[in-house]
Length: 387
Ligand SMILES: NC(=O)c1ccc[n+]([C@@H]2O[C@H](COP(=O)([O-])OP(=O)(O)OC[C@H]3O[C@@H](n4cnc5c(N)ncnc54)[C@H](O)[C@@H]3O)[C@@H](O)[C@H]2O)c1
Image (cartoon, rainbow, N blue to C red; front, side):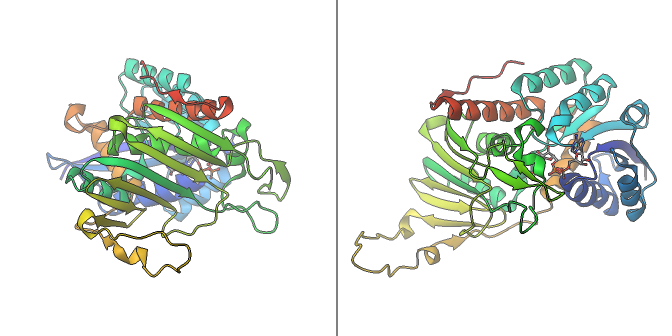
């Protein structure tokens, strides 16, 4: 059996996402399952090279997973001819410079979102990647969540009739860090370090809404910093300069309105940390990370507003669970497999990868316009991005 190895420089692998989702749950999981079988019977086997700033941490991770290769020298990694793919999961502010170097070195490039902090940089990266002829992609993990896949199935099957609106609720309480440690890194709450919930989440909402309902044509948003002081990893108080909540309305094709709240300052009274309710003329659905429930037009109750009487209906019980009908793998891993197949395909059109740098750029554009809409207090059109 022929084995085609693909060397991958993974930069930022000591971080939360880099370690858990990308190294352990994706690359090592693909290796553990015996690689990826290609159409011609060849087995594609990813070979990671861990890249980072802290030698002790890299060495420890390499030893823990029996991996031979790690380095703190990015240029040496990029000069290595066995490395075909550069993957970036560093803090957002460090990303553009590293991606530029990888493209200049002729590597295929895959990156965590957001691809950059500004749309101009994102488009420039897309242009550079295209000019260099390297294949490129941005993580779009939410598309692969079981709940969202079920929602997509309902849309494809025409369950909703005419879709009217979408209501998204994302968030949970992120501890300030004083009496209980914060569960997210402190850079997320400093604008200068690339933090902010708009920059973090609007790129997710961009591809999610685009893939499910069509491209966002206008945005109205209000972003705010509810908690002005937080405590960092060393227990030091710092000023939270970045937005920690955003309340947005996105306009979609055919008059569909999506209203999405994103917040790190909200306590959860929902079934999942993110939920989207879609209402259509023929039925409605609520999709979360894993589950999706529906209510058809024919099964819709007729509540009557009467504040003098206690509610007698169990509204949640009036919904039906959508069956799995499939096995759902880790979304990061599924997307890694798609990207690696795209990288080795002689004809990339035969193993397409939809979420390329231009799609990533649209996410950064939506974040920029969301922040601008908030600062100016007005609705903004989302123009087509030119490459
Ligand atoms: N797809 C998703 O759902 C998702 C979720 C969370 C974060 N992310 C993205 O993943 C990236 C990493 O986020 P994370 O939560 O893993 O962060 P993290 O702080 O846990 O990890 C950051 C990594 O970047 C490295 N790094 C390089 N330069 C740095 C610098 N100057 N300062 C600090 N660290 C530096 C760190 O060593 C570490 O390996 C971010 O771009 C973030 O937007 C994506």
